[in-house]
Image (cartoon, rainbow, N blue to C red; front, side, top):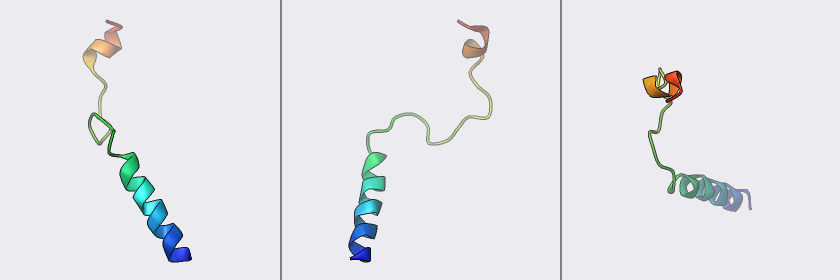
Length: 38
């Protein structure tokens, strides 16, 4: 039973990332335009 829940949890984690857009990392510095408020 524990194996079943592990597979379900892993599947949910993998599927939750399918609709995500944008970079998969946090940029070091924010955009210059966002700093100036434009």
